[in-house]
Image (cartoon, rainbow, N blue to C red; front, side, top):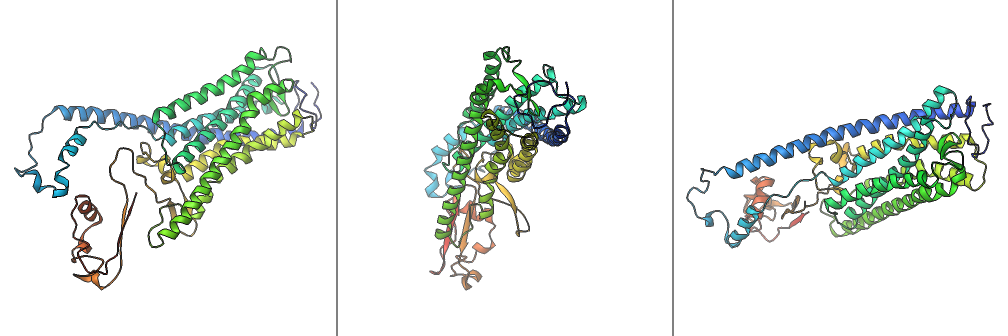
Length: 452
């Protein structure tokens, strides 16, 4: 077929060969960025896969070891013949029955971090999307967009499933972040797994409905044909484009933006309240820079996704949209993968790249951290929430007024002078056991306990 005008409307669905100059230049940029997204998403996915496999093997060995240890009776008497009253103060002796029950309670089963589960599936979705736009390299190699070929059909299918699945899991992460940060709620692990399965079923079901309802485009020249600069749903099925694709894209854009804005406003309100109530204590909330970083998630998603969606809607409304616009919008949406890897790798690096992150029960503010300008390095949020099932918190800050009393007896900071020589772990253990030699000093003492 002869080369067509590069400014031709999108309703030209036939093969295009050779490629006009505008198509060739635009598809080169789309292909390069899609390749970058494909490689970066695949590398991180493989890394997380190896990490998850090793973690599961470690859990399996640990459970086997615990089972073996439980069956082997211990011949070592660690009590040294002393009664229980020698180990716990009076206030703790009455809780011996509770301790025995706690010790007999089976250990809670460990699960992978919920945020990691969602990001893992987001990477799979990004690979779908990147593969779709990477197929533009086929058209560059053939010097034409050839319809009714396996490559054209595969590209149309992957564009449909990749765009929708990526939007679904970005929204799922936004919902999870909102629940953890604003509502202080962690959903059950089964609910997260059910959500993941449900989103993939929904994604393929919606794409499959288009094939089934149209009988693979039997009445319109094919379902997946040339749509401007690459293959996608035939313009003759614009109702299916809207109902089976862009309706859900726009819902996802709205929900994701609304949820992250709510997270940002909630953190701002909590930060202002915290700064008024605890000016002299460490701030357990993200800094202003970190709070603003939450807005990067919807911002990047909107910048990458909205232009192409608006271009398609405009052509459905009969507007003239040049090929250069579609190629630019395609380059943006093809960048979703590498930008997700960069964004999540930077802001949630503690969960993704550290050894303890895989089974961490933290998915809210405590998993969030960005490089702080002027801070001389990396800074996280400073929050560690109490894991589910643990009785005591993770952090305890003790603030004592500075004064001469620190040097000896009677001072407000050190009690009887022995507090200064104790390590942080000793002070914490003493407080948990109900003892402690602080607070017996002079009246000038000012001790504040603050923990999560």
